[in-house]
Length: 369
Image (cartoon, rainbow, N blue to C red; front, top):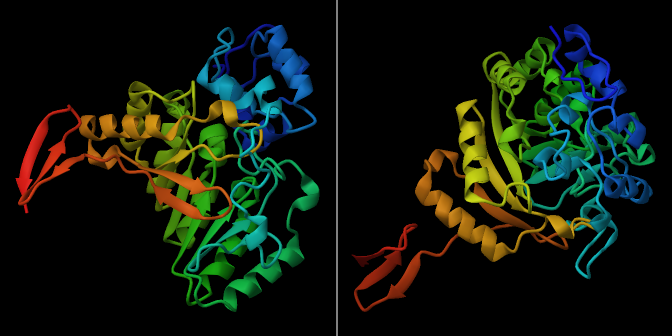
């Protein structure tokens, strides 16, 4: 049975090949001629693909592109991966490195911004190059990828800094590394007494779910506990294959899985879209963790939703769905200030001996001190 729908000139792909994550990586779609095998692209999209290629590469796995509506240019999958001319229009606040990660880099590949945790950049490769990527300054740029000697320097740095309680593996995508390399890196980190936990940030469960294999699960289980944070932005990404592989990750890999989404204009900035996403995640065993305000990275201004709109969305959502399914809405401050929560304010009035609140429905309630 075919596991990929064909469109235009796309050739059918058999099951075993389609489910091979290395085949998916090797056969990523990277230009307009290949793209037309999957979707009908407009002349405007063709122009944008060419114009934006010098700024940030286009790349998508056959699997992820296969989720896109071949006819609808406003499909939430297409909007996340296809270049648009708006990417060429930068605003005054846009930055190449909005979170100032390079400014807090004591050794190559390590960002130590918060006192008790460090981020470790391990790979320049992603299965899909998201158009809103915070690290587009170096993702797809192989020259900037830390090598084996850099890894040794990083591990030495972690050993010499007892204040570091958590290391976050990131990239690119750390799951682009082989199982053996991941096993080595996790073994080194777990051997450092003061490191309390290891977190893996990856979008492969979204864009390349076949990367989650029994062999990978055994590596992760060996180093229990491992916390994995993935990056689903729309319920359309929650496919049957995703459900199967997340179940494998949780049951066989003994991994705690969380999700950080980005609030994106035209993609998920509605109560309905976010509700479907958050409930869809908890249904398959993923805890919604963060909803990020889109970073002020160059070429992403058309994705950004006004913060007051995001606060109102979360205010409506909190009263409508289970608290277990509600993430924390945050903004990562441009310039390296770190994450701050953006809570909705329900307090309407403070009286002499009571408070007046307005709930998600707009009704007023008074409680005493």
